[in-house]
Amino acid sequence: MGALSNPYDPNQILWSGCPCGLHGSMWEHQLAMAKADADANESRFYCVSSDAQAPVGATQANNEPGAAVAMRNDEPEWEDEEAVVSRLVDSAVMHGLFGADANRRAFLRAVGIGTATAAISQFFPLDDLKARVLDATGPLEKTKLNVGFVPITCATPIIMAKPLGFYKKYGLDVDVIKTAGWAVSRDKSLSGEYDAAHMLTPMPLAITVGSGSVASPWTMPAVENINGQAITLHNKHKDKQDPKMWKGFKFAVPFEYSMHNFLLRYYVAEAGLDPDKDIQIRVLPPPEMVANLRAENVDGYLSPDPFNQRAVYDGVGFIYKLTKEIWPGHPCCAFAASQAFIDENPATFLALFKSILDATAYSSNKANRKEISAAISPKNYLNQPTTVVEQVLTGRFADGLGKVRNEPDRIDFDPFPYHSMAVWILTQMKRWGYVKTEINYKAIAEEVYLATDAAEVMKSMGQTAPDTTYQNYEIMGKTFDPEKPEEYVESFAIKRT
Image 1: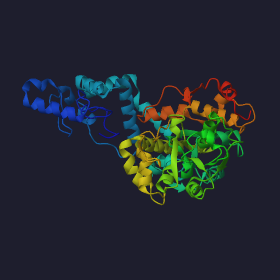
Image 2: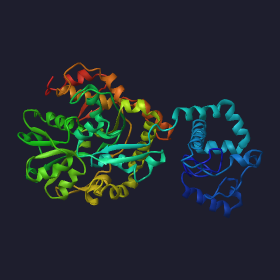
Image 3: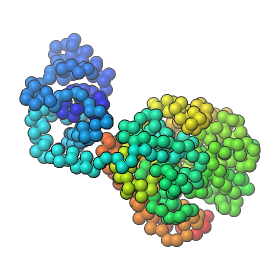
Image 4: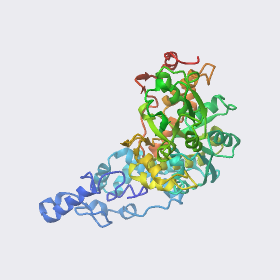
């Protein structure tokens, strides 16, 4: 059934399971139906076919006065905002009351629709609640938006929200604009040319504290992807598997304020190399990395995909290490917007945020990855061979060393912006001298990473959100405790502070 199915209809599947609530899948349900048809003794089971016909064993209570109105199977049109909000509020209240779909259906069958509606309304003033939700949502302040993206696989949710119709679903007309690199993305965002943008997870923090740009309050409502990066080396370095042998190497990263830069620094420093003295790190836009590797202008790079896989595809490099092997589940890219945009356009921002969350949930489903690969590969998006993008998104790929690896979590899409992720990034900004003043880690993290808001919106959409916004992380055998950021910075032998 659809997201807008009638929650007062006991024959509708809203959240999970099968129509009768007795089975874990429709396959098990259909087997039970067949058995009930063959054996009269099985008729005590309440089974319903997947069409709209009346169920076997339905109770008389469904025929009481008022049931005909409540039992409508029609779903409101998404364009009918008031009807949609009304249906979603009803569904959210029922979900909160009963949790499991089977409990909701059993209750409705037991007491009848009219009695159930009266009982629920006694404790939940549904009309008032719906009115408040509508007032809070309000009309969109603007519907025509520009959202920038850099052509990498991390941008998948921002890109896919367009062809999948998620922007349109929430009343938005969004132009997703291909952008050469993150310096351009930052500058166009600061100038207001972009209403929101695909950014690297450290960028909203850096913009807010004024590191690398004029200070401006920025927000990160959602992580675009986790993992999704790799260290790639030129083929001539296949004999240099030990990072201690990289002294004098030239590496590229896509931006200073990037997880790529901070993870590369972290990795080589753990091997005893000073990233500012023993190697060179230069900034290159991701689309230029393969060409520079081929020309031997760099020995390697820590880059977003698909440019690690493209180096293998072109026969010029090999994948040395996926960054998930350094920090499993680390954040990479983000959906970001200025605080000013949110303050001036709260309803528009909420609609945009929901669009991104819908697209992120779609992208996280591995069954959709091949379809997504074909959709984002063309010239107007990534401009890459589909096979390259598919190897990244499915996690089955050639590594350039003669092996075919199967790493389903090579990239994933989890939108929750943990405050602890922000604290870790700030510790690395402090460690390497990007921030020279004292930092209130927690205050900045909670100002920029909108974890609390994300949890509320995700739950309102039926998505799962964690109960905490802080976590400890194990990174190359070292524990990061977000409650002790200064101790963490001071624990490193190689640092600028």
